[in-house]
Length: 346
Image 1 (cartoon, rainbow, N blue to C red):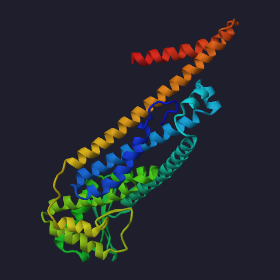
Image 2: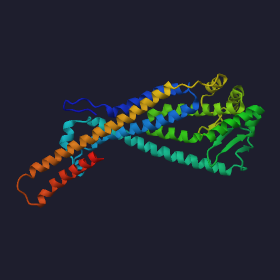
Image 3: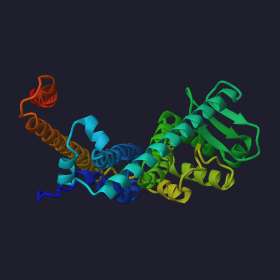
Image 4: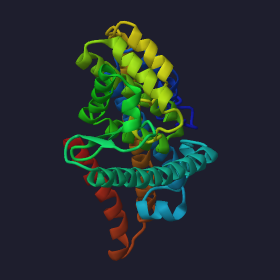
């Protein structure tokens, strides 16, 4: 927001946009060098906080334009002239923010419906699979292996995939898919898809998140098997065997950038680093604090416009009037004063 009466420029409402853009550029590069499990949680927090900050900032910018509509101002009992005098934001910015916010909300609704349908379809597939144990082996020559989220979820492997792998590699593949189910990775996927639908700038975070989930499952599989090389071979062979046959929405051992995953498995486990997480946490804290400050500024601005309208009513009511005609200014200013006293006591 910016004041048009010589007051300092208020930039708090724009800070969440800057934080979102910064994390979108830096986070996908950094998480590939970090331990995958904490990196996945960090990406989930970053996506959630920046999506809320993005939406809140757009709503505040759009509201400054909507609040100047005479009919809205009349219902809200504030002065349009006072709002325009402060010139909190250019009208084109307010209109653009409203359009972007509307498009984001519609996109979020569509993505939520798709996500719900995907989960329902996965649960139905789990129920239709033969047997009752976790592993379901399907009689199919096409090499396939993926995890289906459900209650509790199933691992689906085709006979074609099993024929492509040795005994140790089969164990690694199953450990990888179990890690997906145990970590409830489909929830991470859903969060990233929804936030990316709301804010397209977060799509790089969603793409990086998919890679991090596969790396998370790789590392857990390596711990279970006890040999990182075996897991690397299993990932590589499964990817080569199922090229073009894997399901794009499934949590599968063939997901993500397979060459980078293989290189990471052939190297030592990633070292723990605190600085990237601390830096990201500070950026998210700045995002939240800036949004809260912008909301407070907007609230004060609306209070000022409300007081201006009350003062105008009082001045017009200063001449002798009937008792009924004097009730409106008393109600307006009295209600505002009671609201302010309540806020101070809180």
